[in-house]
Length: 236
Image (tube, rainbow, N blue to C red):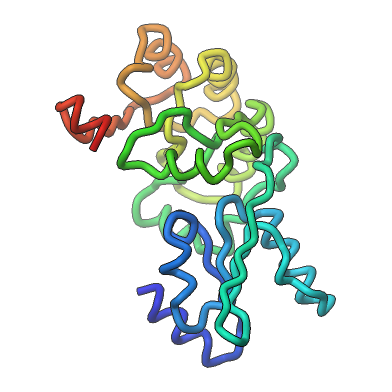
């Protein structure tokens, strides 16, 4: 599907860039797609801004960190990744409107949000081992937003979208930080009050975590067990 979309857009002479999970873990494959101007590995906020500014000012963009490009002679230019953004609160709130999020909410009643970033575990079937190798020595992979800042964003989203019946937090391990979860459980019911669901890891589910989730207004917790065989789960 991505190849079809790129094939359509390139007819208009618009530079097409790709990012996300696939581009990060399989860049050699993705960069070969005809019509792709460049791919971004890892976090893209600052990387994309740097690229847009370079194109706007007609400056050399080929050395911008996180980016891979195809040169005119067919060579692949591979830049290393920059350090991880350690303070997530410096980032502006995401613009959900550009993705037509209200249509999704109308259909399912669900607003999907990331509260934090990163996971400390190395499940073999997940992207995390790849991210740990890619970002070794470039900052903490697990980072938490200030709860107050998260509440500000959720309030804007709650007021900006109609008929939000559920908020779904997409964090890999929402209950990882008990201190953070405790503050969340204090503020979320007062400021937001929308029923929510989240992801958790079985070994992190404690009576304390469950109590805090209940206090906050959580009605569902998703856990991806994958397999009951420990050897298969960890090694394969």
